[in-house]
Image 1 (cartoon, rainbow, N blue to C red):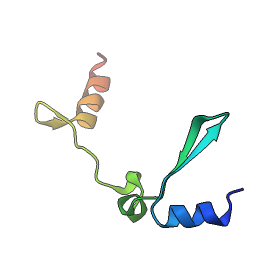
Image 2 (image 1 turned 180 degrees about the vertical axis):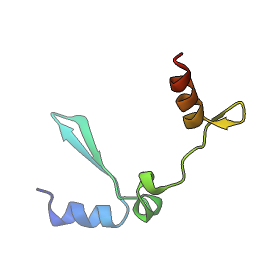
Image 3 (image 1 turned 120 degrees about the vertical axis):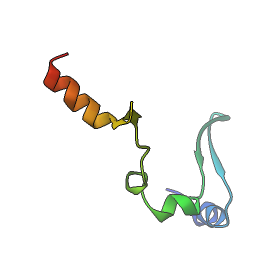
Length: 67
């Protein structure tokens, strides 16, 4: 469990490195504001197209034609 001092450092924007036998094994960093705004699955996605038609439409047409 993390102590209050470590929690206070993270709240202030500090990064904490976790060591095991003197070697770094983990890093605890504060969240960035853009990470808190909305989950990535809610952000607009890249629209792919192939020869002027959407990629999903091209896949549907390919499946119908039996290729």
